[in-house]
Length: 334
Ligand code: AQP
Image (cartoon, rainbow, N blue to C red; front, top):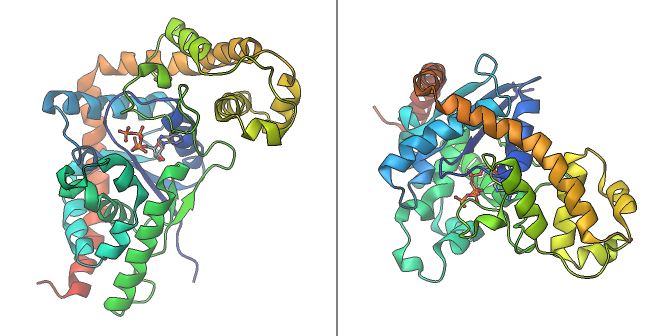
């Protein structure tokens, strides 16, 4: 039996959406909405697994919505809403807390990274974050989830939860096993200061990332200051792979200029880093600056953004409530 394809993905409103979110997720979201039914969610309940200043959170929910629209998501094609406005996410997450296993969660590397050395002080929410993510996806019976490579392990857990629920409640095929849609070329954009770490909103140094709202001058300055070395750019992939910062710059260059990595390497081999940096800065200014300007423009009309979220919430709630009703029945809740 072929099931109807449905895309679901989310972005945390933790501020400063960056080039990694843009190339690893948002651009992919936009191309998927052309041919598939898509639901895109501002995952505010995920955001509060680490403390968020309430005033800033409110603003970030709207700014993430603005970023969705500014990169080309169309609210007439895709459902756009914020997670906390559909309470079925939390209810299904609780049911999944009872299906998911402690041993599974103990293997999640993102918890280990985010909790750091003092795990005892991390919130329980951060620990069970992957169960909520499974609820987000399976509440709509989504079949495809566009994410960066960093989310692959969480998605595998969603599949495990779906499978165990289907087995436990004797309802084979009730939940689909969602597939990750991970871009091949640029699944992970790395920090501009350390090519072994992913570009991230929560990294302290603003020089580690290009924010979607950065001005043209800031983009140029950050790319100029990006970590590199005094040697010339290698002429083969094997040597390039030993230089994570150079590999990251070439990966970004190849993605933004829409050529494959081999071709980008051929073009850049033997040149100084200043050469690729100057070309890359120009490309990024022309791709990212218009997005930043549009975000700022949309943020001047908060009533419009709230209206987009309200309409999205209405559409999402209809699907969510119907699926949750069936889940409750399977579990035996009255
Ligand atoms: N560096 C990255 N390269 C490629 N994809 C990335 N994504 C995030 N960083 C990169 C993808 O963007 C989507 C939304 O991510 P998120 O903001 O919900 O959560 P995150 O992965 O935790 O992002 P950050 O920037 O690292 O946020 P903080 O610092 O707040 O934890 C996801 O599909 C993600 O894969």
